[in-house]
Image (cartoon, rainbow, N blue to C red; front, side):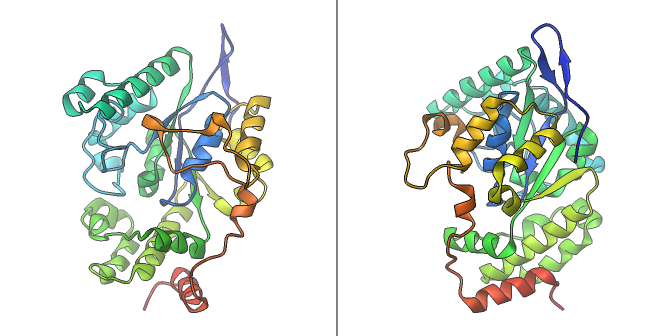
Length: 316
């Protein structure tokens, strides 16, 4: 899991290296992992540029390209539409005028100032981009190959994953995957999802999405597939390994902040350094990560058995 050592340029000893992508299906812990990797101060955190919902997506200052689908599939055959925009993003070149033309609400202007300043400061100080984007999960290989990203793909236990989606009332619309011919061409297992288009069975749909995504990730070269549960059970050594993989420096500051965030007593106040609001708001909140693994599920035993069967083998 070791990657090349980060390069330090004088003066100032700033760390330069590849951009980082943290991906995985929504509710797999990408916000948590992204924030912990950014704790050392070498990365500029970029939240979900491929999210088709505004906010956080559809912000051309961050990504000057038109997102048309959830789980947008990007490969060499459509790279002309994406590579220039993502090269700007990972180089921390903020498109001020493009953002002003598209988004002018007070919230958007506050976000423009926050991201524009962060991109500019990060570029001038030699920081690297960290993309936290669940919607990039099916394109993880392209990010590694075309942009040189260190890709960390989070996977979560399927029962816990489906239970989380059930608790939030989430579902997935498979036509957004099936309407992407390059995705279907490169990953024909996506066609298994056609039978569930229009279905109201949210458990079956979430389980099918998990199964197909895991199949794709497991055969994608150049990425690191990281189980959420392993990180949560013993976060300090696990994150130290991720820092090494991403070419980041493990410092006392990083260790202290990760300890605060991941070994946080359940009854203690939230540390001020981890109270993220406003333009950089994400799903992450400080927690005791090991305790989070023992949270009781609302699923019935029958539902758990069904999810385990659905995520082990595709339907006949």
